[in-house]
Each structure stands twice: as C-alpha cells, then as structure tokens.
Length: 409
Image (cartoon, rainbow, N blue to C red; front, side):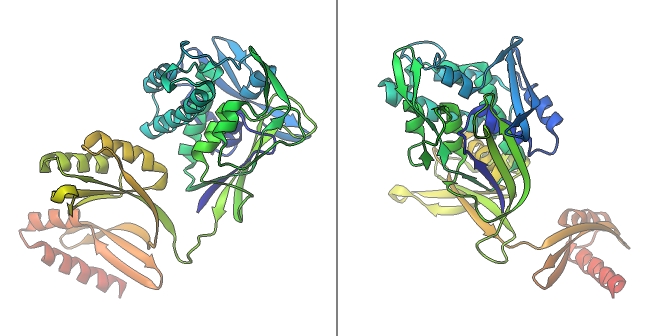
C-alpha cells in the first residue's frame, strides 16, 4: 500500500510540510508551474536549497507583491501575529471566496476548506466566538493559503492510500502576543492536536503552528512511529532558523505490507440512498461520475425510512479521488451525505492488444494472475462488427475466440 510518513521531530509549519513533499515529486518544476498558475494574486512560490546540521533539503520561498514572507513558524515565534480578535475582516468566508476563485481540482479545494475549518473551529473555541466571526491573522494571508493549497495539491499528486504522522514536537516556553505571553503550544494549536500524540521537546520556541497542526490533523490516519515500509523516496522540508537539532520536516514515501496476503489493490466505495430523484436525473448523475473517471457506478433498489422505496447509488473509485467523487455525488444528487469505505481487492494483471480477425480488427483484453489466465474481446468492437456483418454478437464472439485459439494453439 502506498504510504506517506511525515516525521515532525522539530514540529511542523505549512511551508516545511510543502517543501518535504516537493522533494518527493517526480517533477518539481511542473508542480511549481502548476501552483504559480492557480490564480493566487501577486503570489510567487519558489524553492531553494537549504542545509541544516549538515543535511541538505528544500526551503520554500513565498513572495507576495515582491515581498518575501517569513515561514509560519518564524512569524509565530516572533510573536506579533497571535492577535485573533472576533469581528475583524479576513474570516472564513473571505478564505472560502479565495479558494473558490482558484483553478484547482475539486478534491484539492475540499481538502483546503476542511483544513481551514479545523483552524476556524479551534480559534472559535479559544476566543469564545462564532466560527464566522473569527479573524484568521496570518493563516488568512495569501502566503498561508499558498502553503495549505500547496500541501493539498502535492498529496493529490502523490496519491498515498495511507498517511501516518510521527508524534509532533510542539516546542516549549512562551510566545509574546498583543495581550501578553501565551504558553507553547499556542491555545489554537493545542486544541487542534487533541487526540494526536505530541511532546514538548528540548527546543525553546513555537515549533508547530496552527497551519501545520491543522494539515497534520486533517490528513493523518494515525499518529505513531514509522511503520514497516519499503521506502522509495525521502524528502526534507527545511525551516528558516537554525537550532541545535536539524530544523526540518522529513517525509518518507513507499510501500507498506498489506494486512491480507494476495490483495493487490484498494478502492473506495461511496454510497448514498435517495428516494426523491427521477430515473433521468439519476442516469445523468451516473454519467457525470463515469465521465470524471469512476471505475464503476451502479444503482440498486433499497427500502428506506418510513417504508419508502428508494435507490442505493454506489460509486467505485481510487482512494485518492474519494473526496472529488463524494463532492460530485452531492452536487448531482439530492443526498445530504455520502458513506465511504476503503476495500482491498484482488485483480488480475491486465493487458489489451488489437487482433486482426476475418471480421475485422478487435481489441482483446487478457487477465493473468493467481494461476489464472482469461481473455475477452471488447464489447464495443464486437458490437460494431456484428452491425457491419449483420450477424448476432454471440456469433462474432465465437468466431473471434475460435481464430484466437488457433493462433495461440
């Protein structure tokens, strides 16, 4: 199973996580072209080499209107950004407007919105304000939006099926804000990391920022030590300051063993029940999902609440596309919610070749594995040949199979 492990021995900030993931990508230049073309006004994201304690890694540089912004951790350590006050501008709706204006995949936008919702709920809890009245300070700035969207884009590119995060080092001591000295971790960060494994560490200062904490809380399936895995790539995302310990986030990407021997793939199964849609509307929804790349979409009759007949809609897709397809289901159906399951599956290794037969060309699919070999002519090709020759489709299949068997025999 493709697994991403994020090591946070010196905390985590959005730019550090992004830098570590950039080192895992196949084409760094292509990613930078992508993120710099999504529509973040006056914002430029670039990378530069950085060395911490003799280890070479990558530092992300974000400039807004030609001015370089410090990393999240550097800003928070400076202490002048912890000024969340209810009722100011740059709230959750402003951030939503920016995210909806960007040219990014639907699934990436949904991830970024979820990260901001985590931050907003934490700030609302700390300050005793409604979520829609929270002022975001630095996490609403364009450079922080770039960090969050950048991480979401990179995870979408990498497509891990499992994300594990180490215990998070949050730092120690106090940080100055407009209202006095706050303990580390800052209240919002502490609230976000509820349920995660964290520790203070030996370094004085704020090492984990609200942005970094929210990204980890959103994407991590579990917190703990690195799992047994065959590591393929390692990325180092460097912070700006130098400490006694290497100031970096480290990312490992590779394969972990499947729990069940023989399973060679995973799919996400998304389901919802509807009882207030016409057959035409459901057919349109199915077509939209298939056009977006779903493996399969089908419906079954279902008994629903209050003894009403309904329809169970099922969509099968790749795990890293599940958010995209969940959003599409809610957009094109009347449902208010979608259930999600990740299932292991057994699949044959498949190849498709074009065969020349007495009736014409036809594509033949072959599957091999588990001591099994099977072939099947493609239906669309057989249907065209049946229409062209005026014979039943089962006769077309008989002729094709007979000629294929003679060639292979």
